[in-house]
Image 1 (spheres, rainbow, N blue to C red):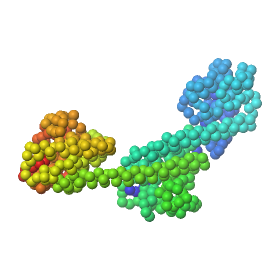
Image 2: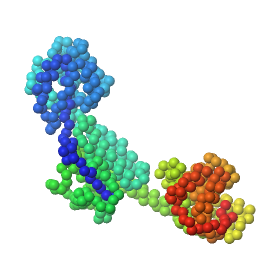
Image 3: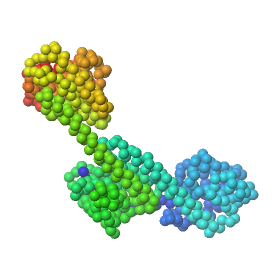
Image 4: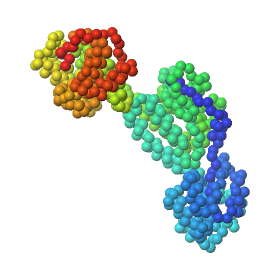
Length: 525
């Protein structure tokens, strides 16, 4: 797995790095007010960001702008426009119907008698009240600056609130065993971090580029990438990315801050794990284009990373436990197969046949893998069958055949004690049911037979025919397929047989032309 930095126009990257302007809406029916405001605020900047003015000459125009521009920082609102109280009604609309609590609203009136200051302040959710006669150039500048500062601080608080909320929402999911792989977990972590970086409603950040790497002994292993970084399966890595990974790894392992020029300006490098102990550092997260993040933003991101580190440890333990359970399951299945003088190769083949058939039948990958895993226990009930019957070289008597057939119900009894084996129990019980209803133990017919059992039935019979047994030679693959097709609609589900044939024709199933049939043993009912 290699890390590739996509080539982009340096000028575009530089342009993205600049912060967007503060948006100010001027609402007044007097064109001269707009002209004067434009002149006074033309060169104004606050916190390194310029000003962008929007003009509305009526309350209705203002509503349209507010719908399209949801990140207006300050609105200068005239009271008397279409009607005597159009501006005040607009204030109610902004706070009420639009539910915009962030924009700073400044009433600016030339007819103070129609809207007395105390009455307006008490009754309307505004942030300032100014008579047009007192708004000199300096006063307007001071008023706008104070309003922008208040808006910025409110958005920082709101961003932090949303950040904490996102962390609280994301944390339970990080601890649930809902990931199929460690790489999938890291991709989810990266998406959460990018979302956390872009929480602000005022469009502060451009595209975040970055990747996650973990330490594997003395090497760094790339787990996920986003933005300008992509993961590709190739032999050679770009020199730039190799050097970047090496530098990041060195900084994290040494527990130091990056030196000047080591990393791209505006980048953020975060260790995954306990910074106070090198043994607990599991890797690092590298993000670019984060220069506008505040100290509070970075603190929230570090909290999220710490949660991810703890979740990663739990997830690794979960996968280790799952692997141990699967190994135990495989050994249990092997015990049944050895008793029937079969090998573990048979289990692997049945499992893979089942997975491929399940996918072709429309199951999702996770569901198909579950069926494949459960399929290896289809004959677990044979542990309860006497060796004299199970390994009898000749044909079975009716009484012996009846005992042999109990391996389906025995398998269910063995597996039904725990919910984790529910699918395996279902397959063990029903894999000898027949499509026409003449099978055992329940005489189920058609779609009443669970799909997983119908799939395993086809896979099991094909493998029994295709491979040599103590009582028979191997059949040629074309004869195995012919047998499945001849019995489709009687013994087998026709749709499953059709899926098997499709896979065989596409070369997915491992078939050769080397084997010829000599007959079938009656002990393999």
